[in-house]
Length: 91
Image (cartoon, rainbow, N blue to C red; front, side):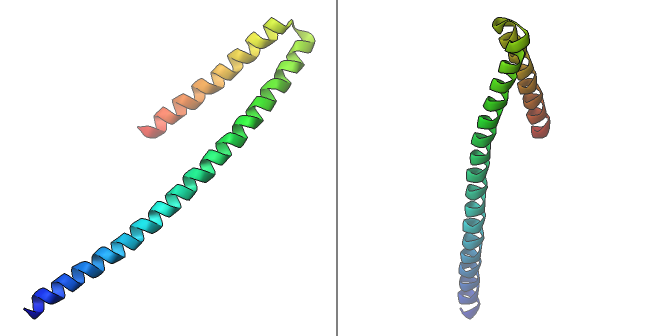
């Protein structure tokens, strides 16, 4: 009977320790996700500013429609490279 009590206590202690470790891992993961989302928003704002600056620079030497087309192709190329890299990382 004493062995059974010790097994139950050990299992309870293990479950408690695993719960603490899981909670710590979840908190770290959620913090990492929040920081990554914030970084993505800042990167998006930076990319938009760079795209606008690129458009203004191209529009000074090309017609506006051509400048928009060139910039759109460049941004689509960057997006394609990013998607290709993401797909490679997931394999």
